[in-house]
Length: 142
Image 1 (cartoon, rainbow, N blue to C red):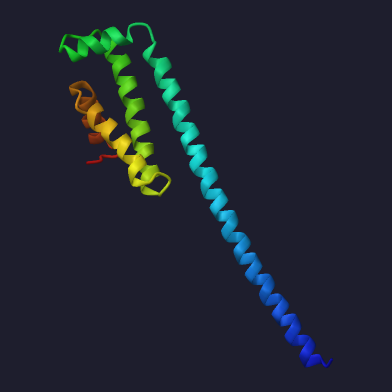
Image 2: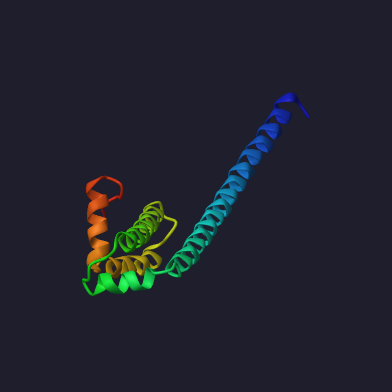
């Protein structure tokens, strides 16, 4: 076996090594993407549980009912509803971002989109959304 033949075999082996590395990298990227999606869903679940806990705050339901009926709110009640609305809007902003970067597909995002359309149909929530959008604190979405 001469030097030229050995060189050809080594080049072939190196090419296979590069090809195997590329395949391995592709598999790793796919696993990383799935891991990121799972982590995002877990974080949104935690946020949902925190929202449920917030709803159990003393006086929250009464404040929400008063706002829905158009009654005058105390400063405390208005603060409760504002904090809840801002939290919800930040979560919606995160969901929108996750959809934009491809973590959520269109079907999955559609459920969130429908929820937030309903959420923003509430006059108090819409008022908070408009105020924070105007201030640049919430990303405006259509």
